[in-house]
Length: 182
Image (cartoon, rainbow, N blue to C red; front, side, top):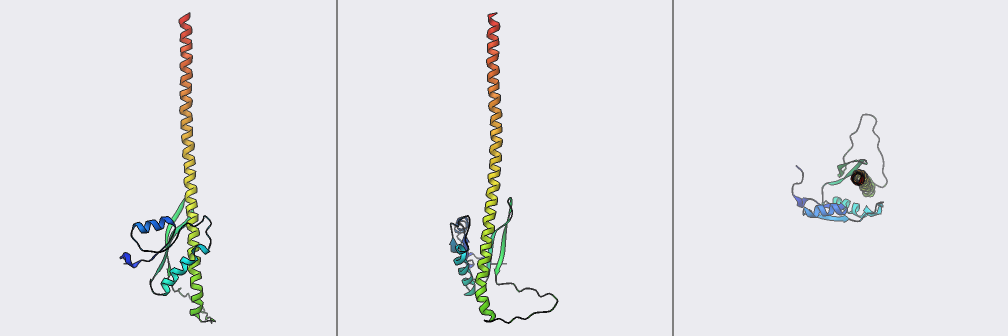
């Protein structure tokens, strides 16, 4: 049973729709990035990622999750929830184990690498979400084009039938008038 109380959440949002959604639910939005370009830069999310890591390092949050749309293909995008922190310990498989010496200490290496790791994961999620958005737009525009083509075909057929009926009516009137004179 995970965090049922809304006050336990600290939310970092990328995008206007996400921000509006969480504000409508009265969820606490700690930081937001709005107005990303279609080709987002790594620097666009760096501050947000660092702030999220700092919340975790200071103990203000005990877990850090990333929720985004994973791009499968142009017509399929899947919402994904990925746990970023705390890091999961990898299971050791059979075989020789290796030991590494770190200089500086493993803690200092982790202090340097952890923010970069989280930045990279968040940037990757932003790119996947953008690809999902473009795929959804492309599919919607393709469907709109197909629907417009169908409507144009139906209207052209209706117009041609009406025109043909009008011509037939005129010919019938001309023939009837000619027969009346004979």
